[in-house]
Length: 135
Image 1: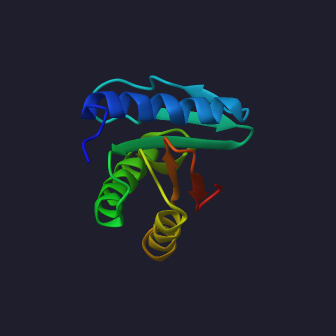
Image 2: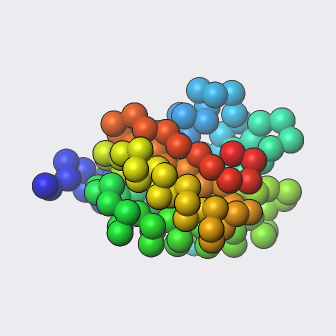
Image 3: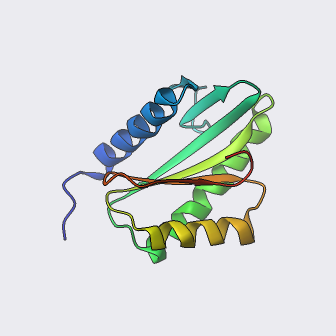
């Protein structure tokens, strides 16, 4: 099935959706942090919690597509957190449609391979799942 969004639009929509989600839950959201190639998509802060957020977007909510992109987002979030002032990494994957089964697979992957990184899965169809360090 063909996606209704181009890749660029999907990425922009994903970033806006994640920013709005944090904003609606009382977080301070910096939507354009830093400059250059190596910068997070967002920085979010609430009280003492501060995250550098790397967001990746996909049309398909299949684990064989999501997990490799999640791995990339985790690595990029970790790299950005190293240079951020007292911030933790948060990798978020956006898919148009996600299932509880996919959320469970994301959670298992994070537990096994990146237990010190927060990760999230959000979807256009309403699924919201966050797990990990401080999430």
